[in-house]
Length: 152
Image (cartoon, rainbow, N blue to C red; front, top):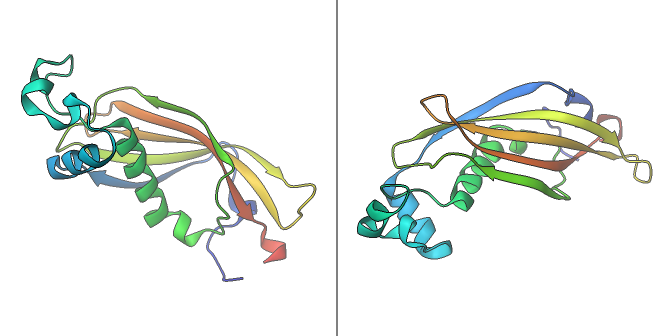
């Protein structure tokens, strides 16, 4: 197994890591929504202006995808990640618009060593995306499996 910077034992419950940022462009919003979530307020400027949002907004799924990209680029690629058994909750709290810069953080909320597979454990986390105005725009609560250092 490769050597990583972070293993299960390195995840401290209650610790928040600032992971990185991503600025969203209109082209990205339109491309993602056209392919995966072509609701009018994501892809049609005139319809979006008449919607409750007053303009084009990113799909919530796009927001989650951007959060995931930041997590992989700035944390998970250097961690002994074994994937995820799932996500428990996703919340889209504020619209994300072209030009917004999202700051992504993750907080470990619990750490459970596996009893049946001692080479790994599960870390429950909450990811948060905050825009450049300090507004919380999205949260994701889920789990990640990580290899344990003593078994690497």
